[in-house]
Image (cartoon, rainbow, N blue to C red; front, top):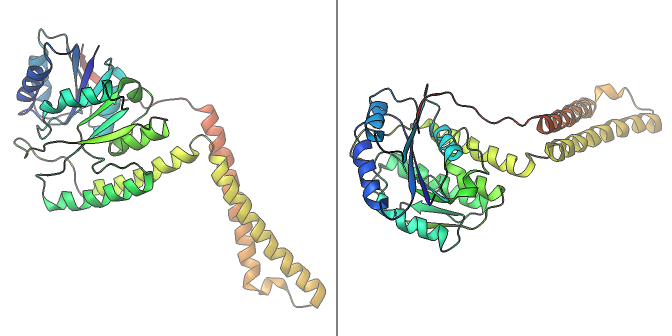
Length: 310
């Protein structure tokens, strides 16, 4: 199959039919394709709309979560069930244009990129979204070394093997290029895309997404560097703290023997040395336990799919 188009959605009943019709006008007769709609526990009539859209169309597949898990869970399910050589994701609010699909497909198949990320250079969002977004994009760009301007753009295309070798969870859909880089897929580029004003519904994200996003990028950096070898981080820190604490106590002991000074327990350095010994031992033990967990665990996130089509 040439193309999988994945659309995560939550309470988008008004936009689903025109969006799918728009996509079909672009891809029919040009590619062998599937459209995967992942309903993230919508409380409106989104699922009923999906059922009506899918009637008599085997190329339309759909999954419905029992409750709202978040966009990352929806993308994870779409990735896991996709069959296309090229996978394209887009939001369901019609702010992303399906007219971009042929070029995104071409860049993967002909130019050989692993990921092509959309860049909404001109945005129709309020300043409360654009300013924090620019800061986080700057931060992730400098931390990750991936030269993208818009990590959070929903319109992206992937080589099929990329989406089957990464796991998206939490709020990490914003940092899929970084996850892919850690998985060894480094041919990443971006393409300027047209951004449309929202016609239907409302934004599903609040201020808390920026805090979660910051924590998630820290998690990605840790998992990418030490996920398979946590002992290298925690063990090193533990040994470092332990040696410094032991050195402080050894110094005080030698000082007492040589200079016949008073009790070493009267010095603040004594308690600081003991604290470092304890912290070092606990940090080392944390690394040891984390190493055991990494080597014994192999489970993946499971989301409760209530209904499915195709």
